[in-house]
Length: 102
Image (cartoon, rainbow, N blue to C red; front, side, top):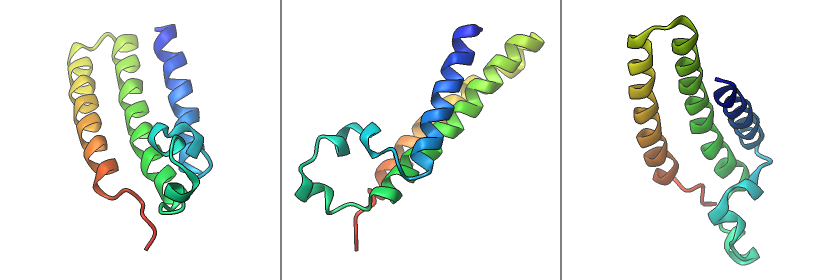
């Protein structure tokens, strides 16, 4: 459970940094682009688009920790299903609009 709490804290911090629009160095594909390629993207929008799913995943992990603390099997299954939905939905949502400048 300690590992899950540490993971939650790290994901929460990374999600908040990205949501504030200042964590572009955390996005691997964007981080490796040349300056000309980076100029095609709105950095703040891209960061916010990456930070939102991280916060949703953090909430799902929080439900998993809560299910362990309360010893509720059904909550564990629900949090696992929500985690899967958040992962798939987050991947689709992040890739849907890449944050290109108009």
